[in-house]
Image (cartoon, rainbow, N blue to C red; front, side, top):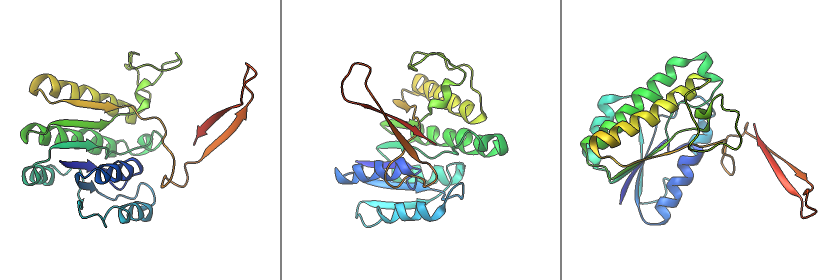
Length: 213
């Protein structure tokens, strides 16, 4: 199976690509290698993928309409995992246009590529930020997400609506994943996880509360 993984130089993209390669899939990894965070870290992640015979890297921005149309037409992907996006809630207050270009125009290019090239399934990254001003805990997929509190969250909510529309109009199977903060090996070095053991109120083993920042 030939799979396009956008954001392949990202934390989730690298790990997803490794799993796909390990099971025998052909992976085309796409990334624009922007400098939103350490580019060397992105290159180091890619270095873990490029030795695989079934992996090929394409440096391309998902917002490049002509480039994306050509890529889809030439490669004929079976499935797409779309993880590329302009991330970050705080940065969206400083540079909102970057979010419109990558997360809206870029996502439209992905949807159109899938639509016109008979992609079997699109999996894409949404975000827990879509829960916005919700105060009910824990969050649920059935919660209202009509009150985003950042441009980043608004673009991710828009992605969900766009994907739903393409599923309805063109029968494109889509799955959106509302990621919370992710961390682990090869994560961004400035995103740390602190773990504070807490005694169980029921007298059992202590529990661990994690906070990523």
